[in-house]
Image (cartoon, rainbow, N blue to C red; front, side):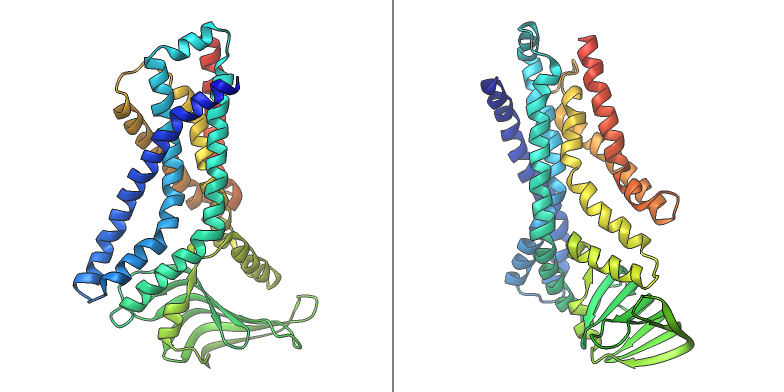
Length: 359
C-alpha cells in the first residue's frame, strides 16, 4: 500500500506546486497594482518595491496554500478517474476511504506547514513590508482606515486603537495601558484620539487604576486629556502593528492583558482564532475535494480550476458571515471563524461515505 500512497501523492504534488505558483502570482500581481502608485507617483525606489513584494510573499503563501491544496486534489484525483485507475483500484478491493487517506494526510501536512509560516515567518515579514509602505506614504498618507492597531510606547506603555485613520491622524476606541514593575496597573481609555506630533489628545475617556488583585481601585472620568507620550505621529505610524502583523502568541498576550483589566476583547479574540482556522483550511478543503474529484465530469484542469474557485468562494463567504456574527456577539469568537471548517468537515465526511456506499 505504500506504493499506492506514493503514487497518489505524486499525482497531487505537481498540481499543488503549479497552484502555489499560479495563485501566488495572481495575489502578488494584485499587491503590485497598489505598489505601482508608490513607484510612479511617489518616487519610491524600485529596490524598495521589490523588498516590499518579498516581505509580503509569506503572507501571500498562507492564502495560496489552501486554494492550491484543493486545486491539486481535484486535478490529481480527477485524472485518475478519467483514466479509469480509480475504478481499477476499487475492483481490486480498495475502499474509497483508503484511496482518499493519503490525500487528506497531504492536506494536513500542508496545513501544518502553513501554520508554521503564518506563526513564525509571516508576522515578522509582513510587518517589515508594511513598515516600508508606511514610511513611503507618511508624508502624504493614504486615506485607509486601519483596525485593531497596536503600538509600543516608551516607558513600558502600550497603545491599542480600535480604528485609526492615518490621513487625519485620528482614531477611535483607544486604550493606553502601562505595566509598571513597582506600581499598580493603569489603563486609560477614550472614545476618540487626535495625534499631534508627540501630544496625544484623548476625548471622552476614563483613567482606571487596579490593585494587585486586578480589581479597579480608582476611576476618574475626563472630557479631554492631553498626554505627551514622547512618540510623534511619524514614529507611531511607522512602528504600529495590526493583528495581521502579530503572531498568535503575541496577540494572545495582548488579549490576556486586556482581560485582566476588564476590557472587551471580542474583536481581538475573533482575529486570534482566525489565525488558526484559516491555516487549517487546506486540510478541510482537501477532505471536501476528494469525493468531489471523482464525480463523472469532463474538463480536466478546467474542472479543477473552476470547482476550486467555486468551493473557495463558498468557504470564504461562510467565513465572512461567521466572523461578522462573531464580532457582533451572535456567535462565540471561536465558533464564528471555525464555522466554515466545521461545515467542510461534516460535508466532506458525508460525501466520502456517500460515494463509498453508492459506488
